[in-house]
Length: 160
Image 1 (tube, one colour):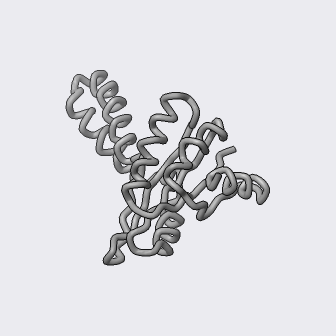
Image 2 (cartoon, rainbow, N blue to C red):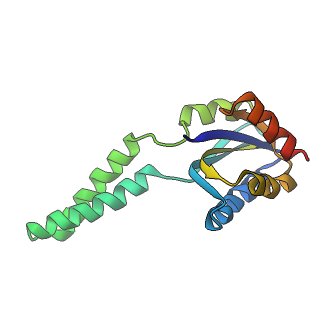
């Protein structure tokens, strides 16, 4: 089961630093994310969202591969790759996986100008090591699907 955790930060830079940290923790096999996103609200109130996983790009890459293979069968690999990439991109665009886009926008609309949030769907983690790594960024827990006890434990651990 994946756990959803939304952490709030005082600014975009901290949120983006946490996204970079999550990649490092993944390399160390301390954190396994299904999906992640960062959202921030500029001082003028505009909302920006950056997803870490792009289903459109993944679909295009997979479609190009399969299109090339089928194209080789019919002696038209370039045409097959082009058709496959286009088909895969459309399929990827229509596929909504990971953190729900509408949920991200809903939470981002509640951010104060200048603040940011990181959305993470966590498959597996080493909780004590991840919390220790996050503590210097002073995150606040905005939303989660954890039990009340685990959420309180997370909040206490992040605030030391």
